[in-house]
Image 1 (tube, rainbow, N blue to C red):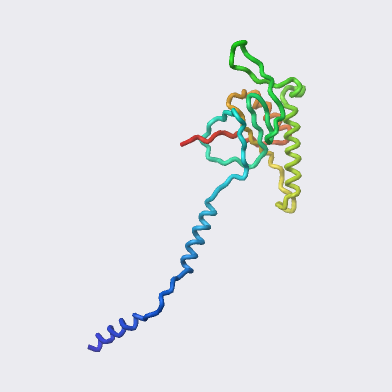
Image 2: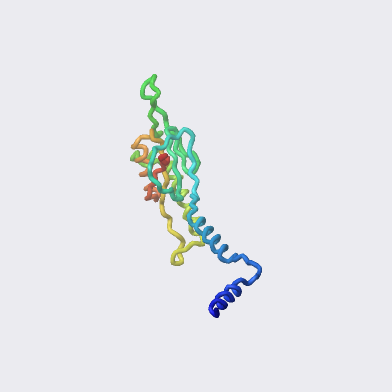
Length: 190
């Protein structure tokens, strides 16, 4: 009998009648972890690429996001740098009744060799100088020096634009100090 009293008396001691308190510490830990996870997994692009009206971009299955860079838009009618129209193409009809036409550069738009587009070169040099000035004023430093100009150019080209035109654009950009070319395309719907 002595053993039964001991068990009964222990059960009675466990039933301490106190007010129930909610443990908020562990609940706050869970909420903080959820918030940190959501902030880490949230992704946003800082650069907004505009799209010209009537521009037909090629379709791509790539999942890469474009980086911040100078933007060149090539439509069959004009060439635009950073939303500023810098030149209009000269339209030449192939046949009198044909809807097809070729878009060519005016003779004054090209240099002596016929490869460098002068208005594009001038606009890209100005954009490079503006970017270098902003980098020099920036507080971000590497070994005490301002960040270097990366020379990245984002090209949005209509899929109807000829390769020869793209080649001249890339040549002009290379002469202006741009070495990395990113061609923007529409994301393929899956």
